[in-house]
Amino acid sequence: ARACALSAVALAPPPAAPPPAPPVAVAAAPAAAYDSRAAAMRLPGAPGYAAPAAPHAPPAAAPTPPAAAGGMAPRPAATPTNNGLSSSESLVDAISTASTTAALAEALREVEQWQWTSDQEAGMKRCKMYVPEQPALAAFYVSSVNEWKLLQPRVLVLTPSSYFRVKYDQKSGKVEHYRKTPLRDVLSLEKTADGLKIYLRGQDGRAGPQKWYQRLERKVAQISTGSKDNAFSGRVKDEFYYAREYRPSLPAGAPLSADQVTDVLAAALHKTAELHRDSLPADGAPFEPPPVLTTDERRQILHDRKAAARAEEERAEREAAEAELRHAVEVASASRELEPKTSSQINSAVLSRPIKRARRAVEADASLISRAEQLKAELEEEHRVRVEAERLERERAEREAATAELEAACTQAAASRDATSLSRSLKRARRAVDVSEELLGRGEALKAEIEAEIKAAREAAEEAERERKRAEREERERVERDAATAELEAAVGAAATSRDLVWLSKARARARRAVGVSAELMERADNLKTEIDLEKKLAAEEQRNHGR
Image: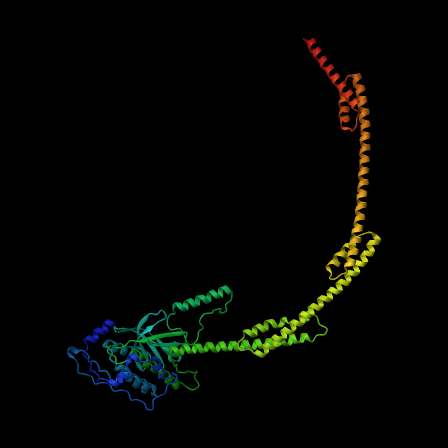
């Protein structure tokens, strides 16, 4: 499209040159040194804007030069102006003083007289005729910046109640599509360093990656919390949330800079919205023309809004903290009036959290905090004194009870010679504070004496038991010895007669197990056994020899 525009400019006849600007005016306000903030301040709706005393008549169109050879359409000459700055100011003033839509359209007719290329003129004319709302007040070639930061060549057509963003194909000379935006949906206009940013009530076009990420973050927060509430800590949807930026596409040889064209576009949008507001019925929905701001002013608005919200939060927190602290002071003061009172009733802890909260609050009542801290210190001292007094009282009561119990246990132990209760009483008396050392010594001595007696009696009983068991064992051994001796003697006599060892072997085994059996008897039984065994052996040998 730009190549076509350049070729059209090359083929078009040279336009009539405007008269040269006075050097003083150029030196006083060059276009390169144009202050965007100052220009925005002169726009309608901007702070400090003052309308001119008298309206400016719209500049007359330059005479059309004769047709060039070859049938090429002649190019209109640019409107003679002193310089770009003065032309921009006069056009902005003419737009701002227009009281009717017809007057505004007449003021915006100068836009058509800028040195557009033939393709641009044809596109603007085609787009103005294509939009469904008529009359079309003006058309501007712009670069639309979407939320993906892509520059899209578009034609911006302004009508009395809306503006249209039209996509026009210069090669085919056709309108591909357009998007209508009612002026009542425009919230504010911001003059940026590169163009004009229009803030709307809703999304204009497809959302960009930043909003996608915000939606994803909001969804993740809802899933993680298990709630459908908007648990999203990102950017709040304010009047500056939905935006679309337009950067002027200047015609070749235009006398105005991009900054000045932005002023004209902002003034036209604001004035059109103002006239549209005035044409609506009084009982209709409220509608205010969008103010014109600079980027610094928008940032200041957001900064002031955050500061106001922060100040409101601080005020609410301060009032809540002071109210909580006053209530805590009342509760703590009431705890001092209880008579008699214990240490648990002296409630100084109720002041701790409210005092910390009041300290964190901004500009909280310093006298209230000081009074609460003083009351807390006094209550803590009273609590310390009361705790000490209660501790001493408990120690005194325990000491008297332990002393009485120990004296009773000593008397009972001396009579019963049983140290069980005396041991428990001594342990309690040792744990108690400042029990009489003389009483403790007497109890310890009595306990040691009783324990010595009990030990001696136990040892005597154990010795008697050992003697009894030894006597019983000796008696059993004597009985077994006598029985084993008698049985062995009988077995020896029977074996000597019968020459059979059956009874002798069993009697010998019992005699060996018995204690103190006669050794002479055991020897005689052993000799007899040996003798009988030898006889049996010789008899067996003879029998074998006889059999051979």
